[in-house]
Amino acid sequence: MTHYFPVVVERESNGTFSAWVAGLPGVYAAADTMAEAKRGIRGALAAHLAALRAQGHQPRAEADITVLRQDTYLTKRERLRFVSVGALLGHSTSPAKAASSRRNGRAGGGRPPVAVGGR
Image 1 (tube, one colour):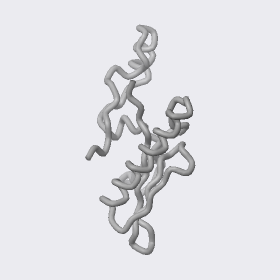
Image 2 (cartoon, helix red, strand yellow):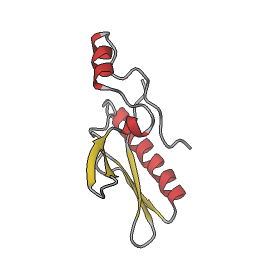
Image 3 (spheres, helix red, strand yellow):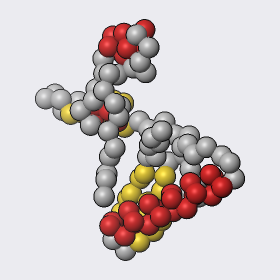
Image 4 (cartoon, one colour):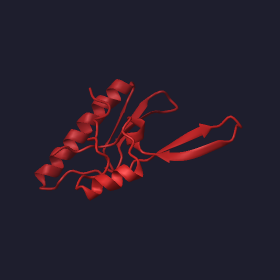
């Protein structure tokens, strides 16, 4: 079974990088470069998952990731809208298609999720 864990990596005001796994409190890394932060969060997540498995627990992140998109129209009116992460990856699903997929026994959307970030 494949599990997906949303990871946030951001640049701090002092130029260093912080990374954490959304939905897994205490799993974080800090480093001088983004590459080091990504390596660090991989190691922290791997250690956390190994500890969970050793205790007989199933790994899962309890997070609902939503992206807020800002649109600026020709009238200069700004609007903020929520979009799915799948939409950003080119896997948007219409409500009708998702409902049809659920009726046909698939978990909405049609396309399988795509791993993001990679090595």
